[in-house]
Amino acid sequence: MRLTGKLQWYLIAIILTVVLMYIIALAGLDIYGLIETGLLAMTPLALAAVGECLNEQAGTVNVGMEGIFLITAVLGVYWAELLGSGLYGLLLGSATGALIGLLFGLVCVYGKANQVIAGMGLNIFALGLGPYLLMSIWAFPGIHVFSRELVFQPIQLRSGDVYFSLSPVTIAAIVIAVLAYLLLKRSLLGVRIRAAGENPIAVDVAGVNVGRIRLLMCIVGGALAGLGGAFMPLAWFGAVVKEVSAGRGFIALAAVVFSGLNPILALVAAFIFGFSEGLAYTVVISPGVKEIIPFYFVQMVPYAVTLIVLTAAIGGKKLPRALGRPYVRE
Image (cartoon, rainbow, N blue to C red; front, side, top):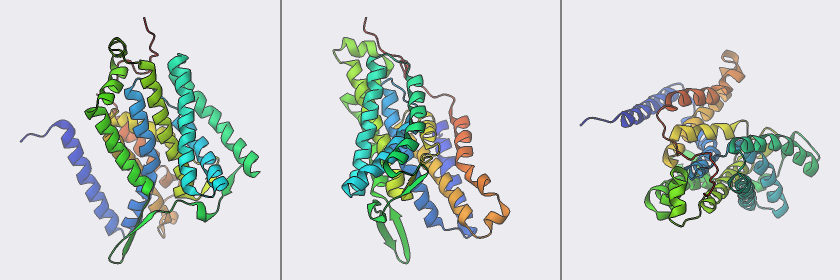
């Protein structure tokens, strides 16, 4: 049986991953710790990327993921401290992202604003709002470390003498990616979402409101990105800093480009980037590595992987024909 080109690349990627795991184990690095860190790093990327896949399938593009990450990371911690619960912080961080998505959708879908400019404006606005909130809420512009009791605790798994931690939000991100794929491919709403991005005139003629579909997907995309933003301090770092997103919003957009707006492939891309970040972190903390390889060179790995994957995958991706174009009813 002859393999298709796409399937061949997937098999090559799986083989390379297995070989890399074997090399890491031979090098004496903590393979379980690497996977834990990789899954944590994957989670916010996957949430934002899947949400943006839905958003772009409907015909709107939001490049403001970085801004949503920054704002919801700070406000998620604020809500968690105010209500005394990391879970509430995550949920209200997601609600904050949904509100940002709503405002973005109103401006771009009904206000007919340029979507790329609006997204970049959101990123620039968040760069100033983040430090302002840190200063106004906690009177400290650089970093805020909160009580460990507010950290949303992972599930502890055990196999023999091996302990493995897995965040429930990571499980939720995987489930959401699968559900998003089924929504797009196996439901009437999914057909309407894809049609709103591919041929909005036909959707309108069929009696479906194009603006409402696009606005709904803006809200969903914002909510998932908001959950990812709140996840970083509340279920991963245990603190919030003004550079908390560290470019992850743009990496999530790279995962969207890699996936061709397929939520499952967006999850795969998020894991690739998350695994590379986990590998960089594991290498850095390994004894003797700092003396051989400069710290900042190792920390560059996730961003280098992003560029390499984008270069390899950017060709041949079919995007919706009406993507980024405001729909004007004739």
